[in-house]
Image (cartoon, rainbow, N blue to C red; front, side):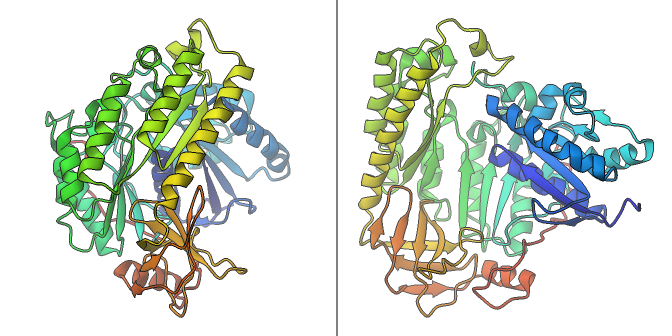
Length: 485
């Protein structure tokens, strides 16, 4: 079989950085002459881009690989590749447990995938290539973006923190920062392609600048994004409370295209648990940041991450978390039951909390988080919101004829388009008529529609009239900057 001109699919698990890397994996495969097909189609190449944060990630990967074994037996030309954090962690273990896997590559050498696939095909044996240092920023690789109007922009990779529950630093390495000029060059190139919204990514995004010695670099970068003509929305994820400084809050408040939304991981409201987690802040500091954000950005929607059942967590510790949740008034929260990860200090800590207690606490936390989120959403009933029409989320509901999108504060909004024909990337201003715990509804006639260059780019890429849902959008940034200098 000719190695070029085959079909592929990429299955992505984990965080936004993995989504960013998957777009680069797809771009590399496109550049090699392959064609993407939807997940679940009989593809010639299947790539798993994995996560290693939770124990279930291992089970999910090896379960999927086991499912593909008979498929591979029937079609030996099928190639299976495993990349990402779990590949970086397990390395040769993957082909030991699943010898029908053709390629294993890590977080630091995404660009090697096409060569490894070709080598595996020619040599008819598995190729495992894991490196322990970053060869090049994935951002300089070609990309096949999943959206015409919204894009991920990595400003750093790796993490210098040593949280006892987290395996990411050992898999992604120490923090490496891209130069501001390279980041802005990518943003400007994306906007010239019709992108209206970018999300700045980093494992600890607001520590940006540590590598080149500028503690104010992240705030400066936000302000610089505000000068990019045509860039309508800027978001970022995920910051760390330790590095969240007042200059960042000020930059958010004074830069009009930086959105009034903030994802700030809490992890626990107990100072004792935070100390065991090796999180370098305490509940008072965390709530102080939230207060200062709301003083300058009153309508900011703040979301968080919370872990329940960390080793040694007592009922008193858990109550402290509930108290912080009550005070912080999060618009939503990603809640997790603590999961042991081999290789992390927490995995060997004494006083592991019994599963039934963790589960019961988790249910109590979720109930409180959802109740507060609903109360916060209800405050927006009757309020006008600007919605960027979404692709995927923006599919028309055939029963209600609603479209969907994100408000400036990142809340999900289902809205009636009326006589308008908005496209993904267009901006619709509408009034909220009903609030649910996880979304807002606007069933009245829209107040106005702003057609955008992003909507034009989506329509051009699909070759379809406004409002129709076309195929996944291609986007191939032509950046060649050496981002490692």
